[in-house]
Every structure is written in structure tokens, then in C-alpha cells.
Length: 333
Image (cartoon, rainbow, N blue to C red; front, side, top):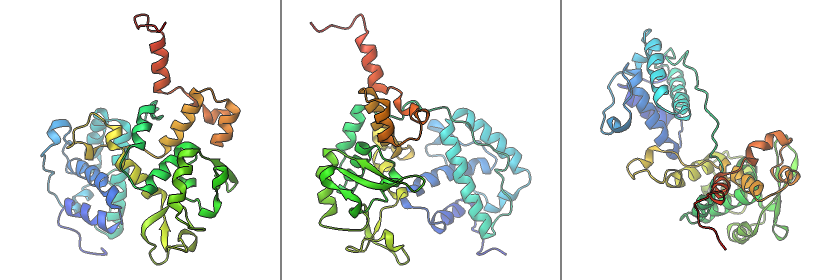
């Protein structure tokens, strides 16, 4: 038996999913775009791309149409055609979102089957641009964001620590005079992270006389049922989650990640991920001649092999290399 009456249309089912499944507002935009795109394919039509997408109205059909036994074969062909036109990351993200929504609709009892069965994720080629260029890092520090974000991002870059470790920092874990702090690493080990003057200048304002509890806090008081370890005993605010920190960073860096995008297109594009701050810090260190043992200690990788992708020269290093060997370029005397 359905938990509630099925919505009248696929579009209505999408909205019910976004609100009922607790999708964050900042993520709902991407989810809605992906599910709207898949609405065409679930109706047996190719999804519009490029200029044809603007102003295109998605087809109207009941969500129960997803149980049509002929749909999986048609959908697989349409998804394959779309995969030939779009990059693998976009196609895989859309497929993942569609499957989450379909699973939620199944649990509501609105549909029985999953028309995406048989559609496989596309292998994504390695991204050689994960390390941000120096001018991108400089532009990041100029963004008009709050103190929490400034401190969080600066700490991630200066320490080259993992974001999921940093959000778990407590005020009592910090040693400000030594510019270092204790984190719980993968596997449960306690390790040190170190930062520089940029973070050191911001931390006192962020801590604001607090002596214990989560370092990075949400703007609102913690809801009932929040674990005690994730609540500040002095402000009653909750610990900032990794997911929320990622959403804020992605949203604020869309223009930096897509500098040539028009204002009307920027909402449909993605910004940077927090992991790229760690990747950038290690790549920039390697470019400046930091030894492999020091990079291993700083990154806390278990082996040199796992560090290799970070030590690959970044875009600025390659640009300087090419410019220095340009026979037509003016030479300093």
C-alpha cells in the first residue's frame, strides 16, 4: 500500500521528493535540474542540450509511467546517447540522483520497478586540473564570505588536511601559539595538522573566547537529538557538517570555476570541491621543491604511490616552464 496518494505528475513527484527526502536547499537546485533533464528521457524523449534547453518545457506524464515494462530499454538507449554528448561526471551525477529519487518513490509505494536497471556509470577520465592555479587561490581569498568560511578554507589550504577531519576539530584540540592542532585521522589515529599566519590571524575571532566544543559551528542552535559532542556547550549551536561546508564552498566558487559562463548559465554549473584545497596545497608544495618525506608527513599518506597524483606539476608550473623556453619571448638582461 502506498504511504500516500501518488502525485498527479512526474514534476510533482520530483518536488515531493526534494521536500520529503530532506534534500538541502543548496543541493535541491542540482537535484531539480538533473531530475528535470531525466524527465524527458523517462518520457521516452531525448533530453535537450545547449541552446535548445533554454525555455524547453519538460513533458507532462504520471510518475506511475516509470513502471512501463518497455521503458528500461528505451531509457538505456537515450542515456547512452546523452553520455556520448556530455562529460562522464555530469552523466554519472545525473544517474545517481535519478536512482536516489526512484528509490524514494519506491519506498512511498508510488512505483514498483526501477527503469534505470542495466544503465552503468561511465568511466571518468582522470582530471588533470584538480590543483587550483595561484591566481584562483588568490581570488578565493577575495570572495565576500563570512568569517567561518574564510577560516575554514584558509585552514584547509594551509594545513593540507582533509575536510572531514577539520570539521571534527574542537576548540580544545587547538594549540594556537604553535599553529597546530590535533585531529582524528582515518583509522582513528590522533595526528597533528599545522597551519600558517593566515589561519592564525582568523582563529581568535572565530573562537571568540570559547574554550571547548566544535570549532566550526552552524548559524542556528542545534536541533533536538543532536549528539552532545556536536553541540557547542557555550552557544548551543551545532557543529558544521562536512556536507554543508562542501555545499557552501561549491556555491561560492561557481564563478571562479567557470569564469567565462554567462550569469544565466552559472546556476547550472558546478563550483570547486573542498578536496581541491588539499590537492592544491600539496601540488604547490611539490612545485616549490618540498621533499617527498616532508610531503608524506604533511599529507599523512601511507605511501609515496598514493602521493604521486598530488606531486604532478600544476598549471602555473607548466606555464612557467613553457614561457622560460619560449625562443621568441623577450629575455631579461
